Image 1 (cartoon, one colour):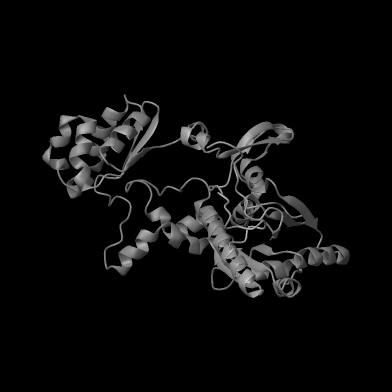
Image 2: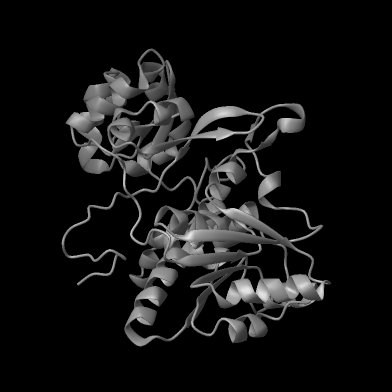
Length: 370
């Protein structure tokens, strides 16, 4: 594609306030900013920031900072509020009253402890779309517990699925449950804005990072509903298999119909042994099976293996490094990255929105569909 990358539908029209800051609410606000909204982060004065403590890190010494925070805060303004000050609380209420969207990070009890009533927020912003994201839900036996990515993955069952059966569970990298909660909140915001456009009324919803795991690992629910046994670590039957290569790692998620093609790619006659002939037998000899596969992949490039598997219709992929992602020809031709300058650190790139807007005569100047 050529020309300027367009992601905005409502440039400068929609006003968003992030009340508090978690990865989940910041993700939702980040994408609303890419849709063209004006986003203001409201943080309690004298309170440590969750995002600022998250790795990985960029910069050195006094300029060291969280790469996650730089990405999720880009394009937003900041307002720090001392909730003990009547003037600052009044200023916050004015800001909330002008907002089209309010993203609330944390439980009602947490905001009560700060001296801010979420009921009051709803009173001063009756026509706003208000989305609240908590770690565990706003009520119930878990609601008062501290949240976080590791806890959500563990409680949601993901740690029971990832890794080898004879080893400890493996935490998925990054912040997938919290990011998913942010995307679910983005859905809620867009639905709310559409409803408000149609009715003129405000809209409120809640979601949690714990509940978002059900969207990430939908196979557990579908297996349970259909009466099948839920799979656990070590139940994969010789696939998927993630092995080392000459330049990284290769993941192959083959199923029984792919077995003959996988053997042809690996090219090791030991795979013809009877003990590898069925998924059940491959699972029983998993360690030896992986050693045979890796014996062949260690001398080959991960992308070479990926393309060979792709040609044969085997679900597989190379494990991409950050350099692989930044240099991806597909991302580059789609102008996926934003180049930014960070004071005290230098220039760098952050992911843009995962969409592009192709405007047509069906939209008016404010992005409304006609």
